[in-house]
Length: 237
Image (cartoon, rainbow, N blue to C red; front, top):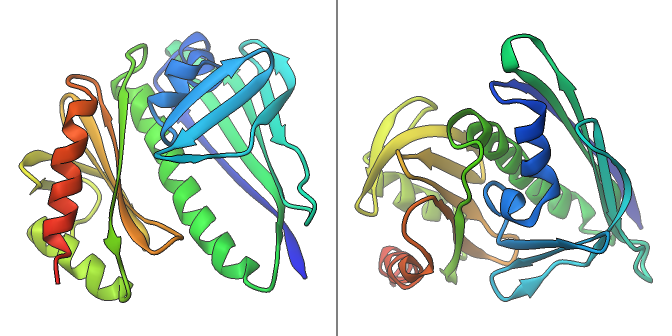
């Protein structure tokens, strides 16, 4: 048993088509809003999320400044994920960007995986929009750290929100883990905060751990151990 899926998202951003194209078609650009570290070479997109490698995704269409598509190969159980980006220049230097994620999820638990994937992709697309609106042309260093196993997600989010001073809404200014910023996105499984030089993201990992998936425009991977320790302390006991 399994299910085909399609997730379309679109937004108009205050960036040029050239800036949008760089963000979706180059390794450094993708690093600055997606997950982990990405390399684009010889028509293949390869992404590592912490110690986990995503299946390679082969570019199937590339029309610079207009359309980019890439897809993983079908696994033996039929699983694959494909991405398509459509770019359309608008007035006053703005651009309409549309991202469609589609594929097939196998197994009887496909609904749980689809829910987690959907919430994560919503966060990634919101981060792309935020990146193009505030950091276009800059390159982030991704920091990916995993907390200890979580058995009660409702309690885990309560702890995280308590560390932020309460359940935040989009546009609220918060302080968490020693950094201050504005909440740019929140859903049931993610929280995104933008500061002047970074985007800090907390995500409910499908594998059962809270994930810090941050994007730093100043500083670097040396911040990883600090966030790992912070998650360990937050969820100790």
